[in-house]
Structures are given as C-alpha cells and as structure tokens.
Image 1 (tube, rainbow, N blue to C red):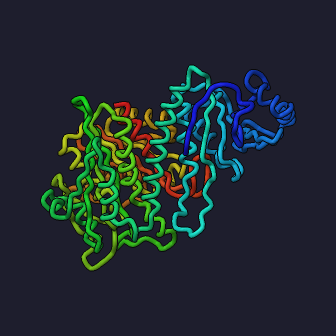
Image 2 (image 1 turned 60 degrees about the vertical axis):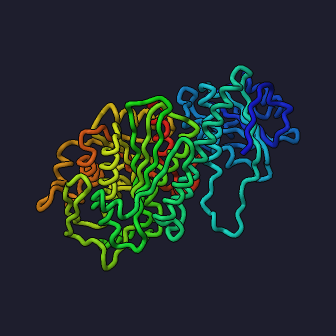
Image 3 (image 1 turned 180 degrees about the vertical axis):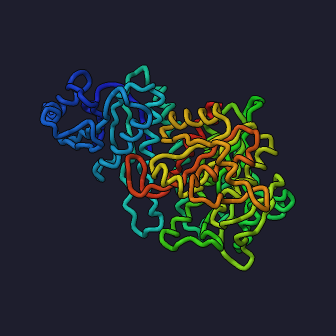
Length: 485
C-alpha cells in the first residue's frame, strides 16, 4: 500500500472516497461542517434521522457530487484509543466499494499523531490480509493509495507512525501466512528456512539440529519429535542492542507444525486447524523480523522449538518418562500435552543463554478457550512487575489480554508420583493454570510471563481489522514490550 500524508481541506482532493470517523453525540460542527457542505447537508440529515449510529460498528457510505464519503462509527470520544482507531481503519477499507483505488482518511480522534498514523496503517494492513492463498482466482482489494489528512504541524509525526504501523502489519501478516500454511508446506525444516531468511544486519539466526538437541539433552523436544518422520529444528534468533544492555528478553514460541495429539490422538473434527499449532513460533519469528526497523535498546532472543506431534512406532506413549534439559524428569500422562514439553527446553535454553526476562507464547490449552473465549489472551507469570509490563504493552498494542492467577497450588498439582513432574494434572480443573504451573518450573527464578493464545490465535470470521484465519495474536504485544525495554 502506498501512503501519503497531507494537510488542508478534505474537499477537492483527488480521491475515490473520504473516510470520516463520527463520535457518539457529536454535532455537525468544526471540521464536520466541511463534510456536511460537501454532501449538501446530507450529513446533518443522516445524524438527525438516526440512520447512522456512532455507537455501532456499521459504516455508512454516502454519495454526493460524484464523490463518496464513508462514515465510520467511532463510539465515545473519551474511550477512543489506539485499538479503536485501528479497528475503524480496518472497518473502513473493508466497507469501501471494490472500485475504489484510493481513499483519504481524515484524522480527528485526538490521539498522539504518531500513534494515530500507526493505527491507520496497521489497521488497514491487517484488514486487507486474506488466507485464501491457494485459490486459483482471488479477488484482492483494488486499493493502491491511502492519503491521511492531518494538521500541518503533525505531518512528520503521522508519517513516522505510518511507517511503524506498516512494519507491524507486514510482520503480523507474515506470521499469519506461516500459521495458515498447510502442514505439508510448513514442516519444521521449512519453518527453519523461513527464519533463516529473516536474518539481516540486526538479527542473526541459527538452527540447531537433532545432534545439537541430543548434546544439550533436550529430552522434551526430542521426545515429542520421536513419532514424526520430519526432523525437529530448534530455531535461535538474536538481536543485540546497539549500546550494551544488561537486559535480554527471550521470546519463546511453540512451534508444533502439526498436532495430531500423538498416541493420545485428537478427535478428527477440526484437526485440520492444528496446522496453526505453531502460531506462537510464527509470531516470535514475525516479532524478530521487526527489530531491524525498531532497533530496541535491549537484547532480544527469539527461540522456536519446532516439530510435529505424530503417532507412530517410535512415538512416546502415555506413561513414558522424559528428562528435560534442566535435568527435571517428566512423566507423560497425555501425549497431547506436548507444547509444554518443547517449551520446557526452550525456556531452559533461553535462561542458559543469559536471558534476564522470559515470555513464552503458545496455543497451549483448550481450557483457556473455555475461560476467556476467542477474544482475550490469557496471561500468567511468576513476577508481577513483569506481568504488568506485558499487560501494559498489550494495551498500547491494542491487543486484549487478561491476567489469571498462578498460585503455588497450581504448580503443586503438576508434581509427579514417579518423576519430578507430570505433563497433565490428572484433573479436569484449571487446565490453563496447571499448564502454566508446569512451565514455571523451567522459568525458575527468572521473571517470566506466559501467553496462552489457544483461543485468540485464529479468528472464525472477518471482524474489524482481523480477517478470518490466523491472527498473529501476541506479536504486536511482544514488539511493544521489547521497544519499551
């Protein structure tokens, strides 16, 4: 998408449509008078009639004088934030007629200009993503150029925001594409090749092979990989801050490129969606992809243990005992609780590499969907200030996250009878919390936050700026977190 930023009047611009946000209870005053005049008083009539409700999410397209004005409901002005701005931008490009090749967005929400510019390009970029890459005939949007209209003093700040939002939406769509790829075209080896392709002057990438995993005693990852003919990969991505930093943030993403459940095999219904069980890993790779642009002041380590979870003659069985790379033994009571096994080795590796702060992100439990649905990512951790930093980053990034408790009782439920740990509690209670309690044993004393994106990693329908399919949930929060340092 080509973006331009300008100041001046909305009337008379060479554009196929003018996009205007309208707030709840707003009268036709100030800058809306110009739009009303362009429409010959139609805006006043529409607002007075109630045909357009600024409380709703439904846009309204008006025609006048050979031009188009798209009204976007922006809700209450006092509640307007980055997320709402991105949602309105995404809603707008979805609502524009397919004949439109250009549009002018009038900024009037009162946000910091850089934030406003980022919201526009990020919302638009995410909204235009489509997962039907393998259709012979795709009807892509014809939009080619977006002009953003703001005050003259804000032009440069809006331009910088648009650059940031474009980088973030491109990286998120990159990760969504990885997660939506069919598993025969996105094996662990292929995922590793993609990660190697991200390497640049800022981000260095290496891929550990099975022999390396054996040397490092990664029994969790190697155990899960035993049932697959596809070799496991352990992806390591490194960003070093320009100035020496004592902080190294490790982002550890689950990279199960297909999950059958192993010997504890899943029901066949919706098993096709298990190609996205590597969403956490894809999102880590996508987040690392942005660092050459943002250049954070902290070191960042991206870790993706990648494998398939398959049944087979060599697959691990319920009752088997594995030894993770930190020496802890794990009784595998259910082979479908495999994500935590590979994350255990990922977290241990990150700590051994000097990580001072940890974040893991994974499609880990169905229980989180029961608890929070498909709207909100669950957050748990062992260090309240670090969890609060993650939640604050999520707020700034426009992603919905909610902290769940991680009391010692949940970790105690994961203690084994014949081993240090077991990979499920054996109870149907608090499945997301006991899974986090298991992972806590591998974070040990390092500040750590766990993001369970099992519910938010996929969207079941087009909604605002998020198209149906993989969402890239958590990626923008991780980027915002490392940018904040």
